[in-house]
Image (cartoon, rainbow, N blue to C red; front, side, top):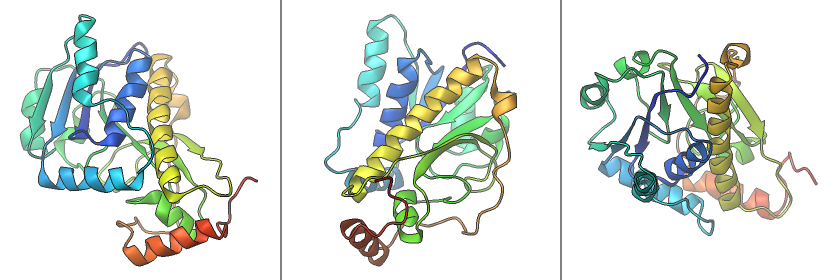
Length: 246
């Protein structure tokens, strides 16, 4: 560990989460050895769902445009599409690559051989504070259950957001904030934390940073249904969320 890592970058096709994270890590010179995009109906559905969650906020440039800019600078990064991020589809593209890491930039749950391949592990940034808020729609469930809001960067294992933590940071929530703004702020923070995690890798600090998450009183959350979202909107409109900073 130490020096810039050699890593593969996996994301759902043009997902705003993955676009922002790529922008963040490229800003510090962390260039993936390969980008592997899942192009699927479920990926399209997840992208549109996330775009709705952050409606009214800016979106980072497309993956293709960011990679084209790198190419203009003389750095060509292979970009391949697969129908699903599983070992059968992904591993042939990684087989001859001596990777230190795999970085997830917004994917479905991935298990199996992929997690065991890179030398120093697979890392993900999650738009919720771990271990308190695992699973989907973290800002919504955080407001609903009065859990502090933030993002976390962690190692991936075969559980759902259960791997060892590297970084965890709260978002300061001010009165009048909207649900869409909270989703956007956790998205951006997730990208920032991945950038900081890679900077810490380069500096050789991961061993001292890595620690188990501990337990949560909540099981991993599924996508928030409409009745839950209506309560979330109402709590924010009435400023009844428990963790305002003002």
